[in-house]
Image (cartoon, rainbow, N blue to C red; front, side, top):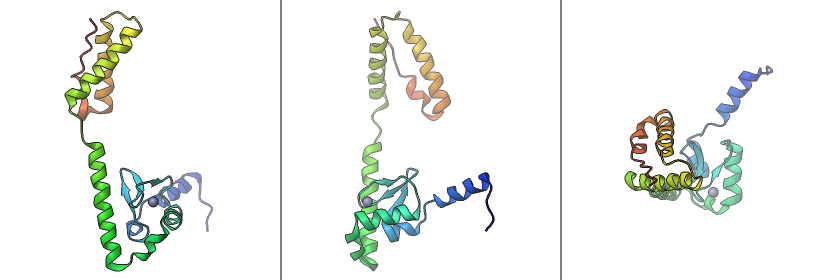
Length: 151
Ligand SMILES: [Zn+2]
């Protein structure tokens, strides 16, 4: 085998880290939010390598080997639904205006605590809007709702 150069080596490592569909059936792992997540305990492994995934499955959930064939498939599907359900709950968007109110209050409080002039609110808001437009343009409108009323 040729000794790979540094760039080639990195590429190989990246490929090793890729999730493989077969892991779902073999080890109850799925690819979710850029992580390799265990369907059984919902934890993710740090490195998406078969060795890590296999070890997790074998050491943490040895009883799951009893599920085979159709039963295994059913178990996997119900765990998958469970995970999706959990994620939907976690990512359920809070009302934008409600969040903006909380954020506005928090920032106003910080400015007031530091005894900054009240018009610093406009300055801070401008900064936030720049960050929002650059970092998450699709959500930039949300940031416009921030009201820094310091009086
Ligand atoms: Zn697990």
